[in-house]
Image (cartoon, rainbow, N blue to C red; front, side, top):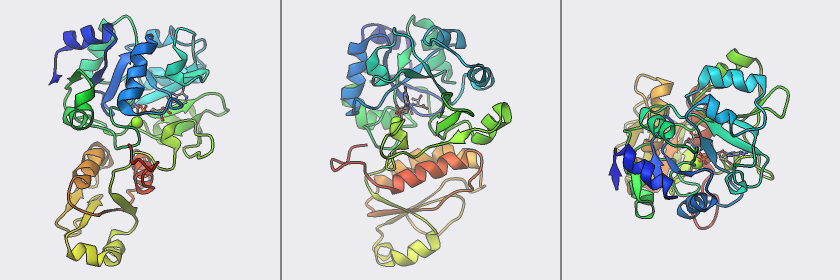
Length: 325
Ligand code: TXA
Ligand code: MG
């Protein structure tokens, strides 16, 4: 069921049930982070491997402080600058966070989502919410309540509808075990914004052997259709036969390539607008009767770096033979 009833969402979460929640980045699939049985339901609904830990959502910096054993100075400063907002901190966890939430890792990922409905919900609860993106593991993240309904509707009792997500790309994940700190996933807060606040950071967003986050897997955030990233004009030549048969979808940044099955992310060339539309566009094209989606990188600055990161992972195809997420 989809609705805007915060009291119902609260009752379900208190009873150990799952509720999909809106955030400024993407929709999350939430459960009481202190209740391991409730958290287990998230892994089952998403078909998510147990080695992939969850982000814990809190309503305030003060609440975050109750979940961790230590908050480094730079972490606190970033929290004050960017929270609520699309930034996730990796911090040493207290024992009250079940190991299932962190996949046995000593750190917990924490963030304060910047969405009025979800902030109100979080601030009315006496526990934080563990919530991954509300999509089957490996697939494109949902940016509307309907996206969640389409894929997980039968598996969760309630979807809190907060409208389309304003940022549209997941949070930036940063850890403090290195000097300087390391960004493990590019997202809604840009590297430029972080560096303006705390100086140079390391960026390590790919790891195949020992991924720190599943978002570091080469292939993730992937549609079912084949995605090819490159120069669209040249790719339209390469796929001219498919194009003639109407089997090509085009996902462009701002240019009109004259292809009938085309989504232009931002005709004005605005990267924030492009980020906001990216995942919905991938879903739209994935659901059309095309065999291939041709796309191009956007300018590699600001949130454009996170967009390019997601496009590369989408183009890397499906992570496993079952074609999940
Ligand atoms: O914007 C977001 O962060 C959204 C919304 C719903 O908040 N959430 C989200 O969650 O993208 P998810 O689970 O789809 O991606 C979280 C990433 C995963 O790649 C996971 O491996 C990583 O965060 N992660 C979570 N806890 C971690 C931990 N303790 N150590 C390292 N990586 C962690
Ligand atoms: Mg995800």
